[in-house]
Image 1: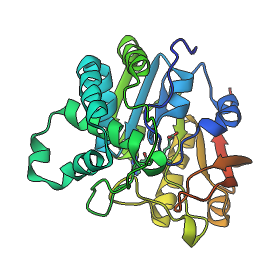
Image 2: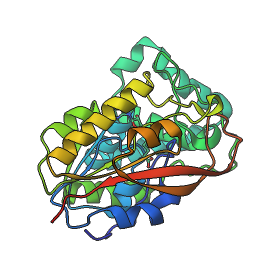
Image 3: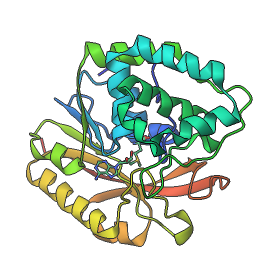
Length: 281
Ligand SMILES: C[S@@+](CC[C@H](N)C(=O)[O-])C[C@H]1O[C@@H](n2cnc3c(N)ncnc32)[C@H](O)[C@@H]1O
């Protein structure tokens, strides 16, 4: 695995891992047969690593559509983004944002939908993808002076990387991705975090959040990986419930600079944990 393309996340995503890359990268087995990221989000780790063989997945179909369109229709996507750029204004932002509330949204092409998500992500408040309980985009307008709506170099570089390597892009529940894996694979899990306090209970990536019961289920999935001898690394929040749940695993505490929690204006250092397992050689 070697970084051969100058690519980085195309969308800013809650929980993005760019700040933590120096802590995370040493734990990843660069010689694995398949790199697997079942909660890929913005893909900071994946795009840093640029594996030759990988499976990426997320529950969020709008996000997965963005990656598939970048891979297959980069040129049309750039054209659509140019259109958004030329029309950009606060009023236009709200018109584009409201499209997923209309019946004709279903008729929009994959390229149009992907361009809409990238446009809204670049121009909304804090650059945050957020949906309400009905799955509709609801981040407000961002008031940026010069948002980078059309990053042509990045889109072309990402498209080339996704096409010239063995990258499987999937949409669905993380458990389905873990099912068929064999020893030799490496799994990086970055689930929606366990809230550490009521003010940080952000779970708005998909219509359905990630409850404590789901954290317990995820731990059981990690146990299954260990039974199969499959190495993994998981990021999660530094809280008693998570430390208790993973008490039989190795856990390292790291400091993350976070600009986003449930209140976008709150910034500062917060602790996170890295939970890891590697089979004996
Ligand atoms: C913490 S974010 C990942 C952040 C990402 N690693 C990054 O660097 O930007 C968690 C992701 O899990 C996804 N997700 C939530 N529930 C899921 C599920 N059951 N299966 C797969 N993905 C899920 C969300 O859509 C979100 O993108």
